[in-house]
Image 1 (spheres, one colour):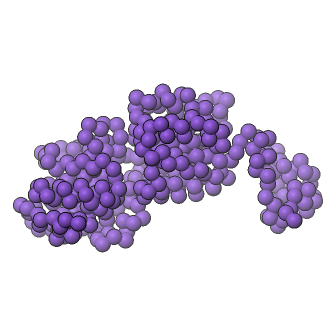
Image 2 (cartoon, helix red, strand yellow):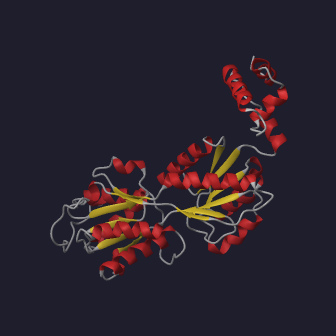
Image 3 (cartoon, helix red, strand yellow):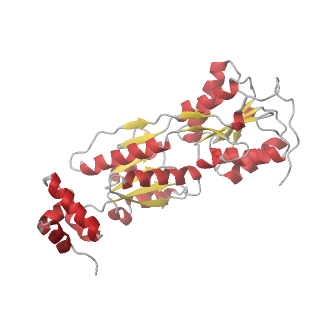
Length: 353
């Protein structure tokens, strides 16, 4: 039979009330008593009734992470980091996919399933800056991730998009490459990852005295491998010379590299490539992919901590906080300084897949 709270109290030599206080992490329990109760719980492999505990405390011990698409490796690795950060603080995580759908994002933020969680980590994509007021109608504590909503009514944890792509572009310009392709833009976007990363690209060019060339900006709607491959195939067909690629995420870079190599382009000899996100796969590609590490673990740690503070202070709302993580340029084989003295006037014809 499964152990009960009575069994724990008997083994630890305390009252059932004391066992309950330890399980619910009440502060007024002596350290020696708390250790004895926890030892008894471990020996008996006692599992508290979380449903009953939640009814008493008004908390579930569960938070929600809303992301656009778990197929995107950045979001799957972010989810992993969030789950570890939450577990270290005694919380479980429900992962929800919004699927680039505005109505679904609203449902996940305000629908009945929010009653199952104590708080929400929300990576917006369909909602934007003009929707910041929507968050005022959300009854569950929320911490924002990503770049779609700034200056909102709650905490915002994000990365240095502009500075990261600026560093990636400067890395290639510093090797003497002058026709660097900005790969993954969203035309007309200003607030959002693509818009901010294009700003960083342009800033690096300006600082280096390199004239901006609109033909060296390649739009890609979705940031998955297949989309990167198709966009690069189409771009090569235009026969516009380039000697570097700053891809706005790693998946785009991986799709583009496959197409370039099949077209006979040598990486990095003919074209050097830098991605963004530093997903695990980048270490194992041929060549391995240089990338901007945006501080994913820091995002998870800070976001979970902020959310816990918001949950605890529900009766006394906190002012909005913004946290920008540190980033690093991870140099690998795809941008090693091994290239001809001048950029090629043309590239090999693409191979159609």
